[in-house]
Amino acid sequence: MKKDDILISKFIGNTPLRYCDALSTRYHTNIFIKEEFHNPGMSAKDRPALFMIKDAIAKKKIKPGGFFVEASSGNTGLGISLIAKKLGYRAKIFVSQSCSEEKIELLLKAGAEIEICENSNGLHDFNSTQFRAQSFAATHPNTYFTNQYYNTQNIRAHYKTTAPEIWEQTAGTITHFIAGVGTGGTISGVGRFLKEQRSGIKVWGIEPNGSILSHFLRYRTLPTNTVSFDSIEGIGRNFVPGSFDAAAIDHIFQVNCQETRHMAMEYYTQTGIMTGFSSAAVIASLDSYVSKMCFKLTDKVVLFFPDHGSRYISKLYKGSAHQSIASSNITSS
Ligand SMILES: Cc1ncc(COP(=O)(O)O)c(C=O)c1O
Image 1 (cartoon, rainbow, N blue to C red):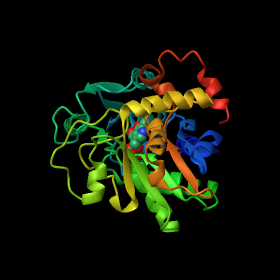
Image 2: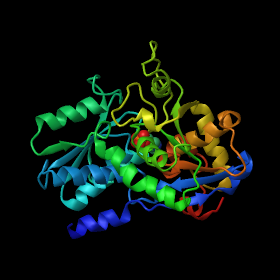
Image 3: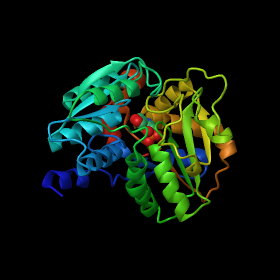
Image 4: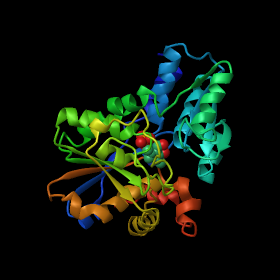
């Protein structure tokens, strides 16, 4: 491994797992939070970005100076941009119109070229981030489409790093893992690993109302009437990504966008911690479904927080951003 490669690998992952007093008290169980905003790109998506890039370089799919191309709600794009730059490559990121201002700014600062697309509806829609990214890579030399929706390295990154970390950090006592679902990479990789250790561990996904993955998980078909789903950045799909492994997931709960916004603000007021949008959706799911979830006092529930609220000040926290982000990082909850 080259020096830069070792440096990057060293700083990605190994994120803390924090016991959350406020949520444990509220839901009468033990709630831990896997805080992924400690990654260099401040999100969980640094992990698959690193695995996909290393895999492409090892297989000689791209030469130095070439473009890594990705369709991203911002976080994977940022991970790819930072790692590509460090290793002597460039990044071309296709984001959808719903991408937050903060993420676009960060992508530009990381040196990425950006194209803003109408939607992220998958490879069959000409105006989607995925279609545009794939066609760009197909028509330009020395480019590589990392393709997080179908790249096996996405699940592998979480299977090899996130899940073993959680297993060790809970000394194998975890009883529930709850995470938002977008590409499916996180929940599939973590769920697969955890169920191999103990099949009874509950692996639950969260998606916005109107997304189709909970229907697919239950019936293995697509719903006949698809509706547009609530916009919560990073989660929810109207197609089934290849990185979604139904065998690793027990159930997917749906949450409402308004309740998620409300929960983000309530959690911030109570704890001083600004959660990301999809992290707030995970907390909102507890409020909506806690009686169905039937937690015991002895359970060890791990909530997955993929990024930080500083990415969503304009969308979630406008008007309350006077409290510093730094202080939110040191406040215990
Ligand atoms: C903020 C955020 N939350 C959740 C997810 C979903 O994670 P996954 O794609 O691993 O399902 C993403 C994915 O980009 C994300 O950026």
